[in-house]
Image 1 (tube, one colour):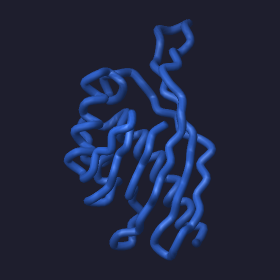
Image 2 (cartoon, one colour):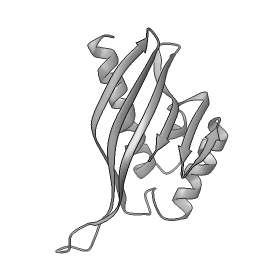
Image 3 (cartoon, one colour):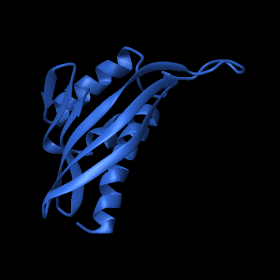
Image 4 (tube, one colour):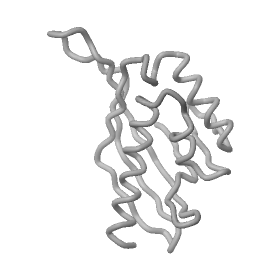
Length: 133
C-alpha cells in the first residue's frame, strides 16, 4: 500500500467527522460509503447509502451531530492495514464533545472506537463497513 493510499484512508475518517458535524446536508458524508456500505451502530447495521443517510439523519434529529448541534467528533489514533490491492481495514478512536458558553469547558458526550473495512471503487477509497463502539 502506498503512502498516498494510507493518507487517503486516514483522511476518509477525518472527512466523515467534518461532514457529519458541519455540512448542512448529508450527501458528502453518505458519499464516503460504497453503494452497499454498512454503518453499524448500537448493534444495528444500516446497509446501503439511503439507510446510512436515515441513521445519520436520526442522530442529527436527536442533537448528536450536524451544524445546529454544536458537537464535534474528534478522531485520533487511526491505524490502517492493507488486506489486498483494493481493500484495507482500520481502527480509530473518537470523542464526541459539545461546545459550552465562553469560560466553561466543553461537555464530553461520548468516547469509543471505529472499526472500518475499506474498499477502493473507481480509484477512490470508501467505507465498505464502519462499526461504532
